[in-house]
Image 1 (spheres, rainbow, N blue to C red):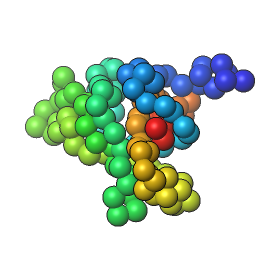
Image 2: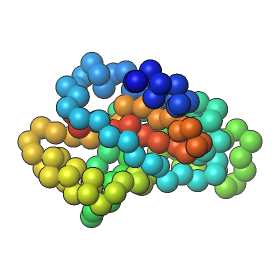
Image 3: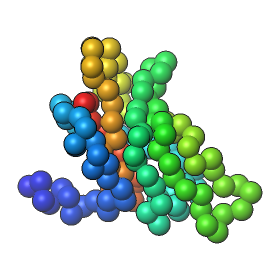
Length: 128
């Protein structure tokens, strides 16, 4: 069953260091708000998840320090590589994350970025 789920995704980047440095308690999937040139760079595989994390600010979840390189054929409209990106989650999931991250020692770490079967960019987050 898990192998079938893996086949539906095109994995762009993984954070192998997270499995080594942290104890993964729980995983969840979130959408990512991206600009046009960011999507094109993701499709080229030009992303780095090392040292990135997610945080809950004012009832919204943001991905910080995720480096998406500028698109090579982009122009003046290229994006900032390290800008915070909003993650798309349901209100119930955000409230649950607020409760869990306020506990001592829990943080949100991105494990991988991939494209779903429908072509949407997704991030797999872990409570670690």
